Length: 285
Image: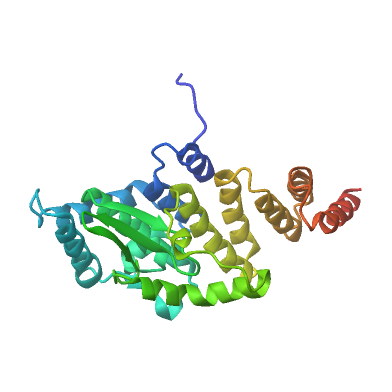
């Protein structure tokens, strides 16, 4: 009789993908997020669909095509021919963050479009990186004559003036919060984002959508992934614990909130959270 092995859950699969920062499989890990909403989805099919797109664009390019030509051909193919772009009419639809849905509808948000676009660009041997720019994820490409920053919703190249203009509302908000002298040079906002941080931003977008829609079950699914992805982001334990409490999962809520109190002992809200833990403990008795 053959020994039986437990079938890994979607969360087990996700945990295996994001275990190490070495060769972090951003496309596969990002695609796997959709399994919470689409349990029957085949992640390998999503990867295969992107591979097919890459094969199509590669057939049109000479092996020795210069990087700028490859970039222009990719943008022509991705935005004009395939019609990928931002879902301006329904920006907060969770499907905009699920790569299987983005590939089907050709509509997404900056970060989901960027993940697919970067996979294609890397397949064309372009040096690309994501940028966690405030309010709107961007991508950058290193070319022989310099660096280009692009909007992943349109492929538009952004000048320094464009970037300063986009940053202005955020910097104004920071000055209101931190004082008139608060200022950070533009270059610091254009640093490369690690694949782990890109995936965290994608999950936090979903987290905010489900939180704003008071959808606690979907919110919890995203929070489970965030805790796996960022095991030392203590605020994620607090937030998940509060969701567990809202769902009536008292034991799980206490575990998460106690972990937060132990590990984030200098946080400003520890007294409030400690009170919440006491109230939850009373519910158990």
